[in-house]
Image (tube, rainbow, N blue to C red; front, side):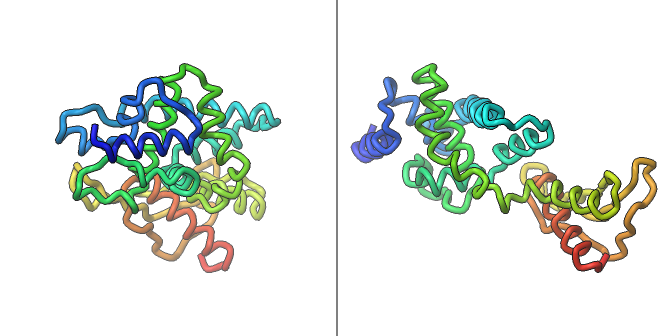
Length: 243
C-alpha cells in the first residue's frame, strides 16, 4: 500500500470516528471495479450489495420506530434510498467520499452518480463486515444525514410518479393507471432509454386524461430514470392545463 493510500484511509477513519480492524476491507470499499480488474485486487462490488441491504434495513427501521406505518410511504423511502442521485448526494455532501476513491487515472468520478452511490453503499457494507454491528453503521453513517432526510429527497426524481398520482387523484377523485412506451437508442452494453407515449387510464384501461402533446423523456441510462423524467413533464402540463 502506498503512503498516500495509507494517509487517505487514516483520514477517512478519523472523519468517520471508526477504526477498522481490517483496513483492507475499507480499501476494497473504495476501489472501483475498473481499477480492481487492472490490478487484480478486490473492489467494492460485493460490499456494495451488502451495504445496500444494510442501509435499507437501518433507514426504514428508524422511520418505522418514529411512527411511519403507511406501506406506500415506506416504499417511497425504499425507492429513494435505491436512487443513485440520492446516495451520491449523501456520499459527496456529508462524507466527501470522492476524495478517497481508488480509481484509474482516466476514470472521472466527480459526475458519476452511480460510482459515488456504490461507494457509499460499499462503505456501509465494509463497516458492518468489519464490526458485525449494525449500530456502528447507524452511528457512523446513517445518523450523519438522517435529520436532513426530507431535505435530501424533496427534489428527488423518484417522487415524480407519486406527485403525479396525487395530483390526478385529488383532481379527478380516481386512482389512475399510467402506462408508457420505451425506446432504447443505445448498444446492449450501454443502453440509452427514452420513455414516451404516456397514457393515463382508469381501472378499465379506458383513457382518463387525453394527452394530445407528443411527450417523451430525456435520454437516460435506465428505464426508471426515463420514466420519472416523463412523469414530471406530464405533471407540469397538467398543472398548466396544457395536455
